[in-house]
Length: 113
Image (cartoon, rainbow, N blue to C red):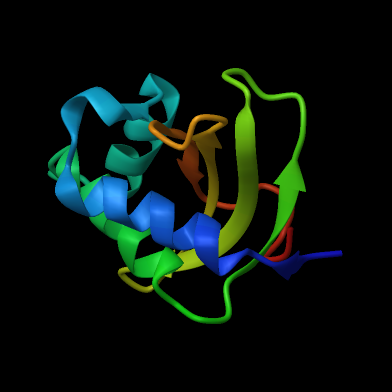
């Protein structure tokens, strides 16, 4: 069952993505390819904007995901971008310095996580 994603985690992730720190953001190739397949012609930075918008919403619910590498606090959630539902999975590393975007694709198991 989905739970509210902590505000502190969302703020930290949004701050890193908004500043576009190249050394502090890792987008897994699969996530970028999936995102660009859904939004042809999208520039790589647009995936940042999609997650910034999603995580800026006050009522984002998701699930904590354990066992991901690198270690940190990872959440999966469903969000909307350009009128499409997307499944996202994002990690804030343990030291709070790096954001890893693992997934950005059409939900494979329905519209709930």
